[in-house]
Each structure stands twice: as C-alpha cells, then as structure tokens.
Image 1 (cartoon, rainbow, N blue to C red):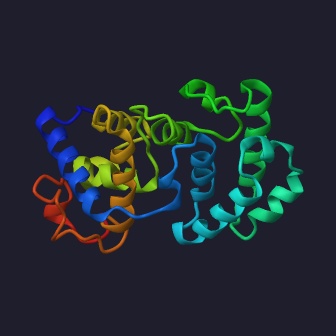
Image 2: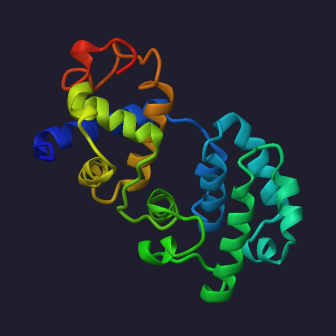
Length: 223
C-alpha cells in the first residue's frame, strides 16, 4: 500500500489530537505510566467493554498491586478475582507473564518489543500499548477501533475490502504516529473509534476528518 502523503498525515495528526483534547475519556489506567498497571488494563480490555473493566481493574490492583504479588499468587485465586469478565484464559496469561517477568527480568516488564512479545499472551498490539503508554515510545497500536478508523479514513470500503492480512494497516498505523506523541495519539485513536467512528451510526456530520475521509462521501453508517 502507498502511504498517505505527508501533508495529509500531519492534518490527520493535528485534528485527531485536537479532538482528543476536547473529548478524551477519563479512565483510571490513564492516570499511571506504571508498566504493570498498563499491562493489566490492556489484558482486561481485550474483548471486554470499558465500563465492565473499570471496577474490576481497581479491585484486581488492590489485590495484586505489583507484578511480584501477582507472580506469588495461586492461579485459581487469580481466576476467581477476575470473575465475571469472561474469556478466562486472560488471567492465567497475565499470571504467567508476571511469573516469567519476575524470573527473567527481575520484576520489570521489558521495554523492547521483541522481548515483550516473547512473554506468554503478548502480541504486537499489547507490546505497542505497553511501549507507548508506559515507556513513552513511538510505537503503533492496532486494535478493532483503530482498524476501523484507519480503514475508513484512509482506505474506504472498496480498498479496505481488498486488504488481506494485517500488514497494510500496521504499516499505516506506524506511519501515522507523531514523533514524541504516541501516548496521546494512540489513546486518541482508540477513543475516536470507540465513541465517534463507531461500527454503527458513526458521528460523520461533525467529524473533523470528513473533509478527507475516504468513506465519508459514501457513508451509510456501516462502512
């Protein structure tokens, strides 16, 4: 895929960050840069809505405030406190990550993408989230919301339908991250997809991207 021209990239970055300044959600995991807490939030948010995660995130961290405390826990206890978030392989993966982090890295999550992805259950997205949200690195993220925003704005329905695999969207996500602003930019992308550029009935008329969105001229609420 040919990447967007630099002027378009800068326009998108400016408008998204300005939107985020006015519309960002106040979420508890945005009040910390502690890698372990960032990781807990990211694992909990997999396939689970934000409003269900917030109380469980707080409860979990009261019980296991550090990665060492989690590593010392019994897996059945971790699963019990995770209930009722569902997708119950996640607490066991998080416990396994804690154990391996303590054993191999002295209790500090790695700040390297390859090392993070060698930990159990951490893929490219979670590694990017930890790097950008905890360590301030210029790393991209690509979750469901980000895929939808980038696909709509830069590809449009026809080009998006021809995309095979994840490489095209990952390349696009990486090209868009503004230097030194990955934290706000990635949070903004996820908020924008979750609250404005939604799967059904996106808020197209007031959208700051509509003047250059590849989908907007033909928007029908389902693109």
